[in-house]
Image (cartoon, rainbow, N blue to C red; front, side, top):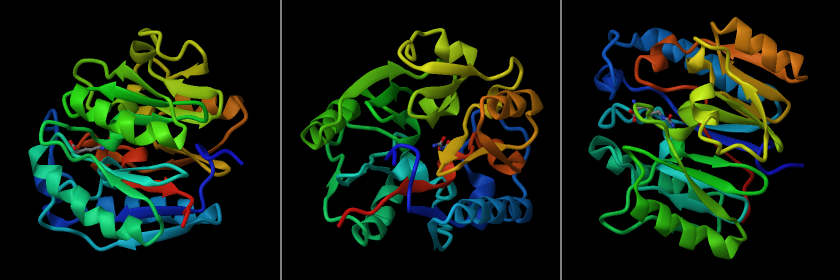
Amino acid sequence: MSFSTHFTHAITRRPAPSITAGLRAIDTGSPDLALMQSHHADYIATLKETGATVIELPALDAYPDSVFVEDTALCLPQGAVIMRPGAPSRLGEAAKMAPHLAAFYGDIRRIEAQDSFIEGGDILVTEREVLVGRSARTNAAGIAELTLVVAPWGHTLREVHTPPGVLHFKTDCSLLDIDTILSTSRLAASGCFEDYRVIPVAEGEEAAANTIRFNELVLMPAGFPRTRDAITAAGFTVREIGNSECAKLDGGMSCLSLRFTPRP
Ligand code: CIR
């Protein structure tokens, strides 16, 4: 079973009422908490449908973006690494995640240097490497520190670039199986996926790029029929999840969970 696509566990956090103050690149309106909660419940039910155990953490109102748990940690088979988010309002979220991961992992590391910044949304783990996109949230020092942590665990880290104006590397791509990546054309054009099979996101459906392969399912945001049909035609089983409210905050499928298989 592939460690980059198959997981026994996921951690999620309920959206908080303060979500209306969440970070966003462009203001397209305030997210509706009740609708986001409903989408979030669908997301969790779909993860559970694959047989996984889902830990549902309580809302953290002090952190408006805390529903986007992916940015707080990197989970690998050998251990977990607590991130240092580059968004100042999100820095404290990482420490709040650490005890929950400690319940499952014997080896927890931390990105610690004051000048190191890195968010989980910029990290794509494949079976053969860990790709990290330099972005407005993830800097060279953070990538260098993570490289030193994961190398002894046998992981090769490759620095790539998150396209300008795109929040995270995984805003524009996702792993569908050990050799296949769903990517926007603007990201694939950088050549970073030359050794993979790329399924292109349909032009005009760039917001569909952030999906997750979770066990036998691919969870993708609803409303992108041409990309959905391309993924389905490639042989994957797709589940569409409403994402209109998270999208107002530049969030998608990957952001909403940490996916892992515990290693005591
Ligand atoms: C932020 O700007 O940090 C949040 N509003 C969205 C985070 C999305 N996370 C992700 O793509 N991994």
